[in-house]
Image (tube, rainbow, N blue to C red; front, top):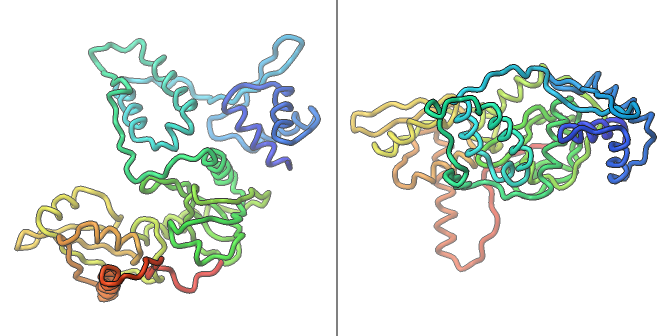
Length: 356
C-alpha cells in the first residue's frame, strides 16, 4: 500500500471503532501491508491534517502505559432530537435499499441506538415509533446486494471526497450505455455519488477527452484509486448540468436537446402529474380531458422504456426523431414475435462516436 491507500484504510477502521497504533498495524498486516509504528503515526498526522470531513476530529485518549487510542468524532454533539426527527429516521430507514440494510446493517444499527438514546426523555404521547416488523419495503427494481459492494462504495466515496482520480479497469453489463463506447481502463474524475432507480452510481468526466459518464457501482469489476488529484469546483456544476440533460441517467442518443411533447389519457396524465420525472417537466390539461406533458431533454433508452410503460395511454406528439425511433422499436418488437429466430441484444439508442 502507498500512503494514500493506508490513510484510507486507517480512516475506515477508525470510523467503525477506536484503535491504538498496534491494532492498526495488525489490521494492516492482515491486509498484506507490513509497516512500522512510526509510519502509522505519520499517517495519522496526515489524516488529521488533510482528510477529515467537516465537523469531524481525530480524538486521542491516553490509557495505561501511556498508550494512545484514536477515535473519529463529530465536533457538534448538541443537536436536540424531537419526535418528528425520530419519525424522519424511521422513514429514511424504511426507504433504504438492501445494499444498505444488508451490507451495512451494523452501521445503521449504531444510528438506531443513538436515536433510541436521544428519545428516552420524550413523552410517548408526542411521538410514535413503529416496530421494524411493521415496516415493509418492496425493494422493487433494486440491485441485488453483493459483498463486494461495500468496498467499492467506500473507495468511491473516499475518492470523491478527496478529489482523487479513479482508474476503472473494466465494467460489465449495459446499465447506462457507456461500457460499449469506452476503451478500458479509463481514468475517471468522479464528482458525484448518485442514487437512481434502486442503484448507486458515480458520475464524472474521463481524464483524457473530458467525456461525461455515469457508472453503476455494482458493474465495476476492476478499479484502482490513484494518487492523482483534480480540481473539482468548476467541474461539479458542469456534471450536474450534464445530468439535467438526461431523462434519468442513461446516455443520450446524441448531443441534441429536444422539446419532448407527449399526450396522456386523462387518468394516466393525472397520475403522472403528481410525480417528478425531469427538471423541465410541465403538465397541462387539454380540452378533451387528456394531459399534455412537455420536457426539454435528450432522447435516450430510459425515456423509451418509460414511454412504453404507459402502453396505450400515451401518444408521442413530437419531435419527429422521437416518433421515428419509437416506431423503429415497435417494428423490432413485432418482428421478434413474427420470427422464430432467437433473441439477440440490440440497443438502437447507443450513443454515437463516443470515445474516451
